[in-house]
Length: 338
Image 1: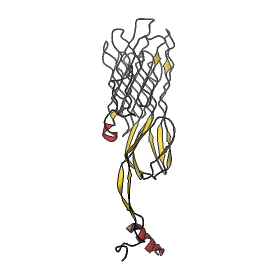
Image 2 (image 1 turned 45 degrees about the vertical axis):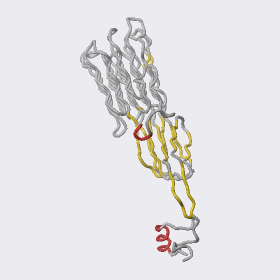
Image 3 (image 1 turned 90 degrees about the vertical axis):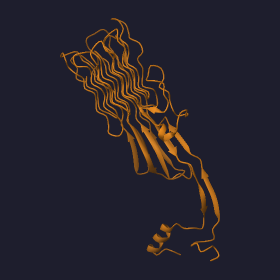
């Protein structure tokens, strides 16, 4: 009983502690846990989709945003993260009655913890409102791209793409029989539908606020939306892109908070509209759209993704000579208890 009746060798109690650690992975590579960490909270955010072009382009869909409250890990161990890129920009060919029938989705973002891989789905590309084209509907993705208006046949609607459950929302539809394109879906809200001309372009869906998980702003890894994208807010990620409008007197739709790019404001014939924006890098925000009046204009690129990892603070006292009850039981059953 010299050791107080504890099963095991003489105990030497020693205190231990580890401060809370929050890591933002903005580029692909290894993430290494702190020595005492046994579980992590993660937010995985994919790249946003591209903004549309054509008669009126929709807004791109935001990258998927996946929050996982607890995943088991080992301390002082490297784990691989892959950060997804945003969808590439699309360029209006000029004053011609055609536009490229293309859609560029965002790329998936993932992090692998041993046998568990957490994956966020890339945002859907926006509908390109090409006359007679086949891709005026927004594409599905983490959040869906907004629909574009293709001009023919009269009354056609570009439907918004569908979002991924628990990661994002659907994109908005373009207006039936008119020019405003739909807003791209965001991680926190659906993209708005286009409204009757001369209404403004549809706004992109708002992103999701991560401050309940990672603390209130300011934080060094919270990224403001930036010029020509959403409201300037830190701590919100994965906003949808704004849909464009064909009216030279109406504004394009604003991007959703969380890095979603604004749509261009159309200018008079032969002139480029201003105010369009890319999705903000490392937010998963989507690109804003442009209209056919923006000759030579660009359907903006989506923003790249990011992974946020939180390791909780730990403190306590360990006694090196003690065995956990489970270890004692397992050894007894196996016949290996000393």
